[in-house]
Image (tube, rainbow, N blue to C red; front, side, top):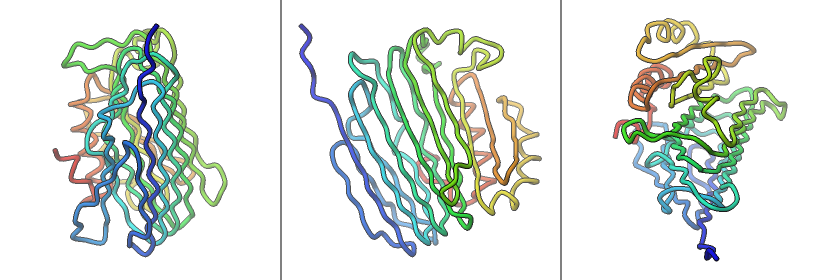
Length: 264
């Protein structure tokens, strides 16, 4: 009989008001670093001291911003390992009022037979800007990793003034090779990324960003915009090329606010 191993659990609860840290709560495997800032933009770096996530792990994050500017990233890529048990769970709840949020974690790397259920709720008001970037990697190409089976559910909901504005959903389970190889889905690409932009910032960047995206030829990248939201979707053969492209795009969206960890 297999012995049930101790699992990792973490929680963060952070509040900023008037660009000042009001509350910070961290427990378990979830920690946060706050590097020195030399402009009006504060930076947060999330750390998972467990070194990765596997079955039956859980992480909860709450972030509340009022009249503040925050760039958020992670210290390293988050690795979702294979395991025996129930799916790992990540729950993220963000509230942004009259603030600017740049949500820019490093990539999520999924291994064969990994199980993850992630839910992200982002609440904005009409005066706030949000740049939201998430990347998923299905096996590391440099390590010749192949994904045969996994359970991956990832749902993001964006609310503006308490009304649902946008929903993103990925659901993969069991044998996912058809999803990875199908010409109507990923076409053998193992790295995918989505950038969402909401708020008054959209009108400021839409024309220039559209021209920038049209110049990109090393990855498949497309931009769409409607209903005062802007979306850039990218797929690539590996994370290296995708990361270079994301750096290029994000530098043109948020200029000097790209987190330091993105250059490491």
